[in-house]
Length: 70
Image (tube, rainbow, N blue to C red):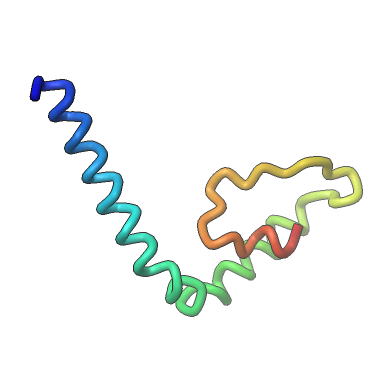
C-alpha cells in the first residue's frame, strides 16, 4: 500500500470512529441540552421574518431539532 492509500485508509477509519462516537451520544444529547438549544432557537427565530423565508438549509443539522421550528 502506497502512502496516499494508507493515509486515505487512516482517514476513513478516523471518520468512522468519529461517526460512531456521535451516534453513541446522539440519543442523550437532546435530553442533556434540549432546554438550552430551545432558548437558542427562540432567539434565532425572533430575528427571522418567517413570512419571507424560502428554502432553508440547516448545514449543521445535528439532531434535527431546529427543523421542527422551521
